[in-house]
Length: 207
Image 1: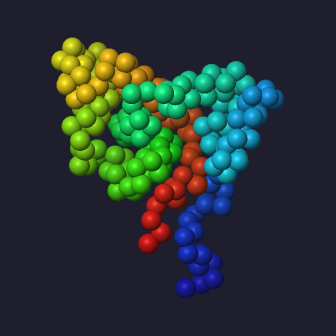
Image 2: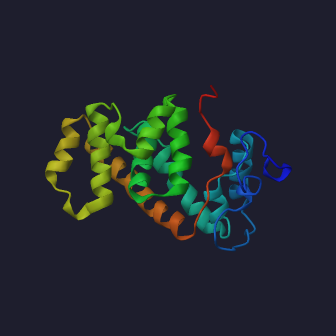
Image 3: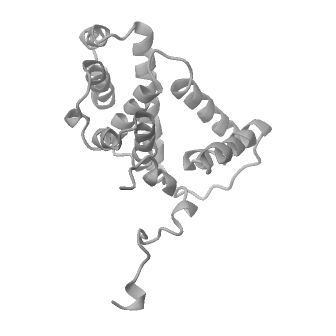
């Protein structure tokens, strides 16, 4: 093998500049408010990098604030849905929409919260192949129907969620999370948003 063809173990083409590409649009970062700069500083402190979705929105401080506020309310605020369940919804909706960014970022979140990298990959590829509880089957089936044919949702679909243990407040939260990721998926695909390289390696067994 020639020297030109040799690569360090684990290296892939263009890996070095992977994180330099955030999205396809050339939008310079705006001057951020104290709150939004604080958000970026917190990301650096807690996870070691700024998620590219936030960097993408950072061309406009108000848009970044609106996105992060809605995300925090839907994904982190108290809810009858656990954080893992909300991440599961994000992954399955993103799988339906084939959103590279969200599948990578939220697939990593499912692996971290569940401690199960197999579950993360199953939800990315085909959630129906996963060994899920009746509650989670009902939850994800509803999220998929919302994504594919929301106008076809009827009372029987909501009743199926109630039978699986979801309150009406839970159904609202489920629908809100699924709606948010349908929007986010389309936005990420439209601007070719790229996930941070770190997401690919998070919560995977090195063995």
